[in-house]
Image (cartoon, rainbow, N blue to C red; front, side):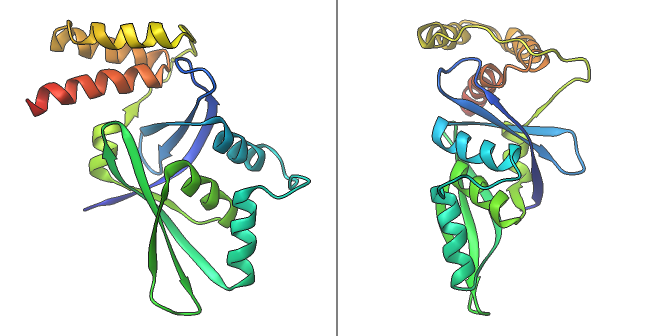
Amino acid sequence: MKLVQLDIERLEPSSSHKSSYVLLLREIGGERKLPIVIGPCNAGSIAIYLESSQNPERPLTHDIIKSITNNFNITISRVLIHTLREGVFHASFFCFMDGDEELEIDVRTSDAIAIAIRMGCPIFTYNDILQEAGIILSDDYTISYQDDNLEDQESRIDILGTLSLGELKKEMKEAIDSEDYERASEIRDEINRRKDK
């Protein structure tokens, strides 16, 4: 399967889930973006590293992992987002020690990315995953945050089941244009559910 390299475009608060964040990864050499919803702890760990040239006063978990790998000559060569199952991304990082055989270690996607940015290693996904979950943003999008209420979010998901495929595609375009990645993901999942039936 073809691998596609990704880079971090930005991290921002979720427009639909309180205390969650959207990590937007961009395809290097392409237009597709991969939105990943992450929790506040890992969002904070990623944001500290992206927004500050200084290390935190006390090391965070991902900083400790970096210290361990450096002190024991362990090299983390890459991160791979390898699976998308029921709307959840699964990842691994690959490492080796002093020329030994490379090991694959299962890890949450947000942890893998927090480690990758500290270690300076590349992030990859399969083209199939980017094809399924990726979005393309138009040049004239504007940021629009709505409905921070989880109950409203759940009722919006229920409504998707009543829409036609054409209406879903129209809703998807509007969600992407307004940069509402969670909404776009929900619509994408509904379209994929119908394809699977």
